[in-house]
Image 1 (cartoon, rainbow, N blue to C red):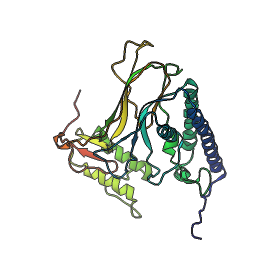
Image 2 (cartoon, one colour):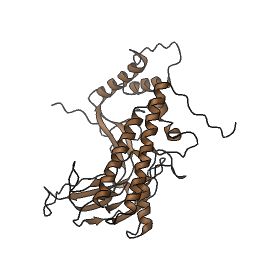
Image 3 (tube, rainbow, N blue to C red):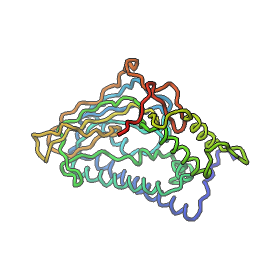
Image 4 (cartoon, one colour):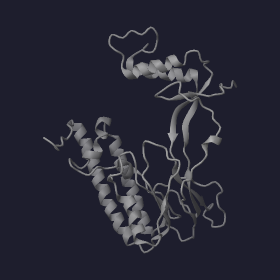
Length: 338
């Protein structure tokens, strides 16, 4: 029947785990409503700055991003900040692997701060309940956590912790002096590994899934080898002829531009000595503080284009191994013998 939704089948144990997730999500929704009510009537509410960031596109790495500065005194700004905290559902321009982003700094009362702490605790309870589910069920829960025909849940928004800072915090008391919001530009992530270690890793992965000798020539397959095994064999063969002590750049991944905040805070509960090495948390959500001391703030600006042609090129154009990705250096590097 057109439009008919069939709920996946679960074992008794899986049904109990799924029910645990549903219960934790319902608790989170209840606490989120309390948070909304508390913040809406908070007499100590003060927005230092707020900037809306477009939802990022999974398919590309942007070279420039325009952010929309929101007026601190506006009720619409307050509503947007509260929404970014308590909205766990997908909007039309989203997919389940992207999140809504709004960066800024907000001062709240101690009561609101404590309510946000409880909010974070429940977020962690939901994350742990989801982690207990088998992957084959977990990957569908955004559609079924409350039942068929529900709105699609973005669990990344439900999990993410609200950044909290206060001298009244029992775990990490902190008085903030200055916050500087900025963009951390795109780059690449990965690590150096020797050819010998990388080859051993590929062979170990193949043998763990397909048995001992799966990557040793000659290959004997009664049936056509699985695609993953073929890829691992090709990666091992690509390393032939390379010295075991040559260094590769492995586990290559692109890091997209993302907002961060440099948080400079006072030393040892004083208000005259500031730590010169700041905290630099991701600033996809507003930072919430509860303190009487004033804070100097530098709002987030636009991400401006950068001339990458001046960057030194170190890696080869094409990987020597795919999934996991690994690149040779244009100027070969080797393990230094100690």
